[in-house]
Length: 219
Image (cartoon, rainbow, N blue to C red; front, side):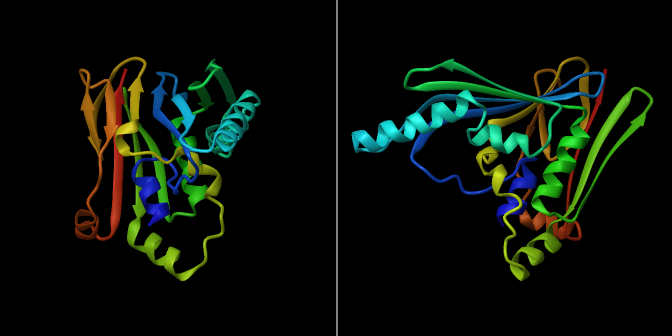
């Protein structure tokens, strides 16, 4: 259920291998003009490899890749084709801290790219009703699961593996305005922040096999 788990948190999911330990947060900022900026902070990045030479090698591969934006998070965001992608090394000594931000013309575009990369049967739509903007994603979860079982993984979503984190690592933040309703999210901070929450499989089945996610906000 790798692909399905990824879309539930509006990010690609895959098992991240390796010995690098870190604390990661993903914040998606939504601007009034529709732009979305995805900021990933990787804190205290270090290897837990016991062998000194291997530990140093793994850590050097990571920080050298980050210097040119070719680390895992950078590659994952790049396949979503943002309009701008930038990586900053905040701490260049072990343990490292790296910030990567990607700007998108809209949240709709970013979600559509995730859906395409994962090959999911889904519809993504943004609607406007007066001052209220709503993003809806409807994923045929049952069909997605069947497709994954029936066909070998084409590897298309592999580049997104480094974006896979627990749901509590993600949040959506309005730069202005407030969220007025949500499905699949918990609202906090005077309804200016939305946190993805798990949708139980039983609830998806009860909804005809459709996983529904939506966020509505106003300026």
